[in-house]
Length: 121
Image (cartoon, rainbow, N blue to C red; front, side, top):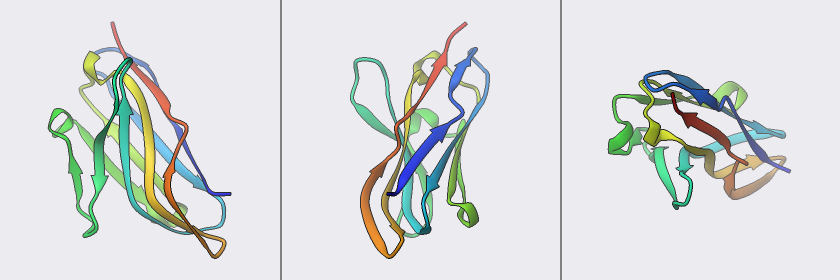
C-alpha cells in the first residue's frame, strides 16, 4: 500500500525556519503532481505550494518568497523549506500527490497524515 509520510514539524519561534519532508513508501515508480497543503486550527485545508503539470511550482501569496518546495525523484521525497516563519503559519501541514504509480498500480489523491508546525514565542 502506498503511503506518504511527513516529518519535520515542531515548535519554532517567529522568524525561524523548518524543513518538512514527505517520503513515499512502497515500490514507487513515479509520484505525480505533488504539493503541500495546510490546515490551521478551526479552518479548512488550503494549498501552500503545488507542482503544475509542466513541472513549475506555484505558491500561494502568503508564503511566496519564504517557502520553497523541492523534490528528489530518486528517492521519492518532497521537501518544504520554510523560512521567516510567522504565527499565522501555524497549522498541520500535509503532503499530497495527485497520483502515485507503485507495484504496477496507480493510486489517486494520496495524502499524508500531516505534521504539526507551531510558530510561537
